Image (cartoon, rainbow, N blue to C red):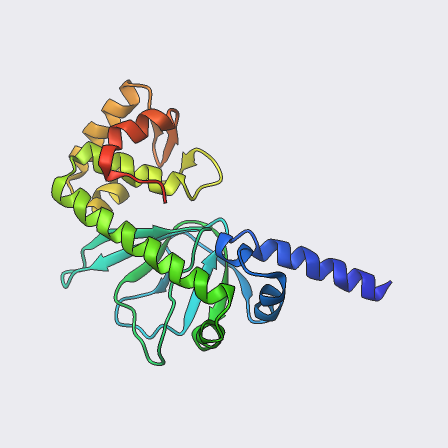
Length: 234
């Protein structure tokens, strides 16, 4: 009876880890081997997982939290460069002593699994599905960064706002996002009044419903059309 209970608990725990899509893509054997090194932890909104220049001691696999990767300027300003949710991992370090080249801030609260960087590095160099998934995620993250740069250069504020919301909607368990216009304006690097105007137009056209601190996406297809080439599902 005790062994059965322990086995059931282990199965439930593994299912919890598989809420992260990267971990779910591993073989059962790989996940079991890695699981003893994974620590489930709450990720509160606004929590800094690491800051630019800090050693990358740990990596994080979000389950239902959303993490914003931000480039921080010398005067303290921050621009959003990418976003990671249940599809991936943040803080991967490929060599000992590697430091972060951006800041990772929890944007939407939830949970995630933390693992020591040294353990993840060892598992990566052992090869297998984990190494393949980490390289695949790195490629997707690079594509997201490239898309961000192209959007800043060629996209309108409305297109960039639609893409910003869609990127987070892709990683959310509902069509409701807890964000403020101040946060969006800061991470997009534009004036708050510009976001207010664009959000108001999207609401008038029936694409979103905006309440203070909350955006509900009502028409995803129309949002994608408005975003145009600024958005490619990731």
